[in-house]
Length: 384
Image 1 (cartoon, rainbow, N blue to C red):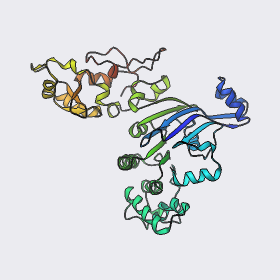
Image 2 (cartoon, rainbow, N blue to C red; image 1 turned 90 degrees about the vertical axis):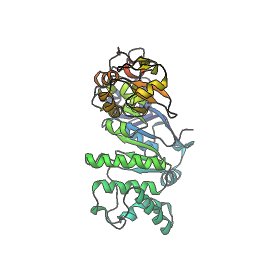
Image 3 (cartoon, rainbow, N blue to C red; image 1 turned 90 degrees about the horizontal axis):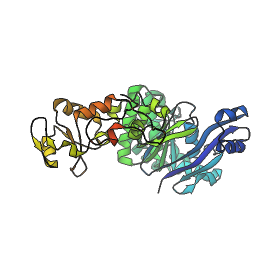
Image 4 (spheres, rainbow, N blue to C red; image 1 turned 30 degrees about the vertical axis):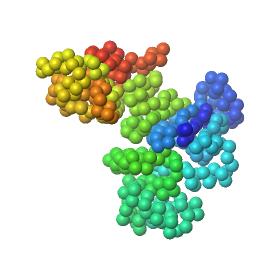
């Protein structure tokens, strides 16, 4: 069962919001509504988030992503639609019941730290527990554990203004972790940080996720950040969700020209994996470039310059592909040969443009769909 479900969410600000939703369902656009004094911030957004998943919502400023996030924990009431958390309809709860859910089950990490300047680091980290009424000794114990997880052991007695921006954001993260909430909502949490610190915080979050397996909804306008963090990504535009998928899905099969244009500057070598671009292992059988006869999977594995797993980023294939004309072998979790990556295929994936799906909904995507190992016929729209 999904941890979180958003079902046909609409949020309209201004005049006659209910009437505006009816107009949107009938096909009206945002501009028509604006002329009538209504602003459609979120339009028919539906998705589910699985337990232990990092679900990223990304889009440019004004796309509706932050409004959507605030509907997920009841800070904003949807004009229409439902939010279900762990089977409970949050949109049906009263104000007191929502506060109880937010204090114990859903935590939020903001973009601008939101630390109390007159409280120590420890007191800031323990604040959510104080709101819950947790006794002081217990909340300090849990806050210390959370600060340790966030890499702030030894800073408990410091004041917020003594910390760098990255360290302040770690306090905010520790505060969310201390409550042991089932769901973390992170609204542009790293966007105010310098690039190097931002990457450190991304590393920290990924490391924490390996250990804690939290369910996280992460909002960002940065596609590289989305692709680095997200198990799945929802791309928003003008209030609506235009595509949901893994980083590879969005990069290799963009839903439309907008998504394709968005992905054109992404470093594909760090997003695509060996499993996404590999050719059928049968294509390796025959005679290797050095004259070796390859008749079985064992022959292919023995001749390969390297053996990698399906989830290996293709950037790690550059060295073996550059030093040998023999294809790199790709194996599953049991060590069985599942595919090969010849040098020509790696170069083609990196260098060719990619097209969004045609009118029949089928994009021409060379790497994942063509398993022959030969030259690809499709063209990809997002070059490296």
